[in-house]
Image (cartoon, rainbow, N blue to C red; front, side, top):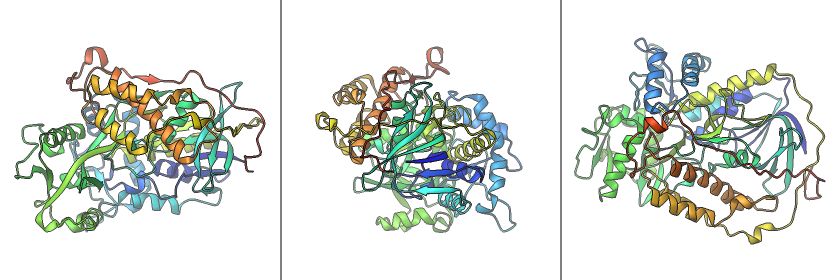
Length: 522
């Protein structure tokens, strides 16, 4: 076992921003279940939004964020984060692309009223920002790769989080104790057949927090990105919204423009509107393409996307990229305040795994990396000035009985297919009810001891927990708002649902604090 001041679970931008800003007097351990650079943040092609243009103002950015979020946002959270955006960009400004005069290049993306998106390396913003943050990590930070976090340690006396159980690459069990345990594990995009997310993003952190008794909120709000590269029945990667920002248009195989008359912003309408429009065309047997013939210097502006397309046999000289929508971002998650404090003392969540209220029912493009930078910095500042609490002496059970032999688990592909078909872009009561019944047969809520499960089995369990939270919330919200669309309730219902959230809390939480068994490596 280890003892640290801070344990960070995850290695995306929020996690690395936090680690980079923590005092050198803090002993910090970063745990990632794969490799340091295997995270959604590293894949992010789009940029970071900030009102820094001469005609722009943070209040415009606020208005766009609230509009895209269908006014389900927390206005105070929106204003605090948006007004801080220019300063956050300035702190790492050397990373971003500039014009011939040395000024930051500002791009346009869907639902924004101004050019305010900064990029790095054209369409490799996430990679460049992550590499920059990694370069700033100092000796007081230990990074442990292939560490699968599977259970939080909570004191039975005062319901405080003091540690986390993990399995290493060989399946050995370890316990890491710390005064501050931070979940920065991302969302749950891999719950769906089509997704832009990294292979590791399965909803682990949300399931960890839920099993520990933390509040989980707004899980019905899933953003489906309109344009994933679609080849031979499979999604191959993200085609950034910035492509449409530079003039690309959605068309059918006959060349018919799809977004004309659908929304005033046409191809740059909010993501849920574009995704639902594409879904309707696909459902009616059409193929959908991005027409890039009007995008100047496409290969230079979008080198990452160019490589992605060429590697998958797409001839860009024809000017058409085949696309489908897929799961991209979770607006809900672990309920936190602005700096990441959860309903459990000592437990924090930042980045996509957290729900601050910034995104509302549908995230405005390029606000996600912004939120990660904000929360990472603010939580670090708070931890730096907070006196370190002594971690109580406690022993932790790692029971070895094979309870999982009694548990029937579906395949990961079955989970992904059922969620895409029943709880995907367009939902209704019948499909949601069927999915709820399907999920209930696995009796995941009955699980108490999970130490003996393999990492693959734990992944399935966490996926099923997150799937159940999404399904239950989608069934309860009898309206359509943002990323949640019900064909049987197709309109927003402000009278009954405006600013109302669905919160899930696991009431019966078993605390296993006995003797440490020999299976626990130290």
